[in-house]
Structures are given as C-alpha cells and as structure tokens.
Amino acid sequence: MTVLVGYVPTPLGEATLRAGVEEARRRAESLLVVNMSRDDVLVDAHRAGSDDLDRVERDVAELGVDVEVVRIEEGGDPADALVHTAHERAASVLVIGLRHRSPVGKLIMGSTAQRILLDARCPVLAVKEDGG
Image (cartoon, rainbow, N blue to C red; front, top):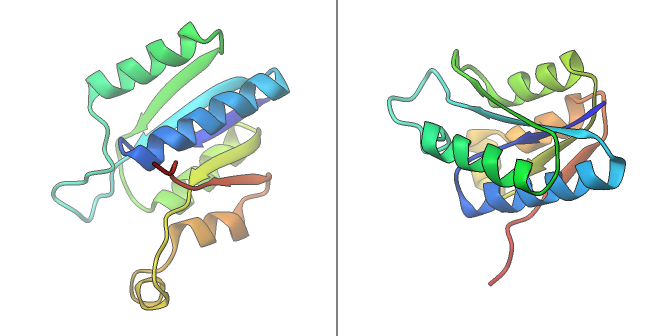
C-alpha cells in the first residue's frame, strides 16, 4: 500500500509533505506525491516546477522513504483527481493540506478539502500549515 500526498509548492504544501513522510514511515509504506494544475486557469500557483518536484523526490528519498512523484498534466478538478488516484493506487491514506477559509469563501468557491473528505474511500489526514 501507499501513502498519497496532494502537494502544492507552498508552506502548507511543505507541511503536508512532512506529515505524509511521517505517515509513510509509521506505516512502513511508500509515498506517492501528486501535484497538478487546473485547466481553467492560465497561471496556477499550485503547479510545482520540475526543479521543485525533483527536490521533493530527492529530499524524501534521502530520508529513506520509497517515493514516487507524479504531476497530473491534464488538469481538471483537484478533488476528483486526488480521490481517483487514491482509489486507483489503493492508497492506505490520503494526506491533504487544509487552509482556513471564511464561510463566504466556502460558499462562493466550494471546498476541495471538503469534497475529498466526503468522497475518498480511504482515510484522509488533513494537515494545517505550520505555525511560526
């Protein structure tokens, strides 16, 4: 089995990655790090560059965790993509970042994290950004 991490190149994404590494070590499983970009935006801050993904793979491997880094190129909906990938890869747990949003923000924009929590067939570990 594997631990799947939804990664974005932000401080929250780094906190999520650290939690995923800890979970993979605890479970003695491999780590699958997934990054994607949405089709409906011209520039997506959540899309990690190749250098960043190479760094993630190198840093996790140096910690002794078997890691695979995947970029989903076709975009689409992040919640659907992560839930589908978790099911397809038989993930034991899906690790996602959870950022604070106002009630109005949730109403207007929807909540990717909420959809993942409700739709995933495996347990979901929601991580908040490190304080400091």
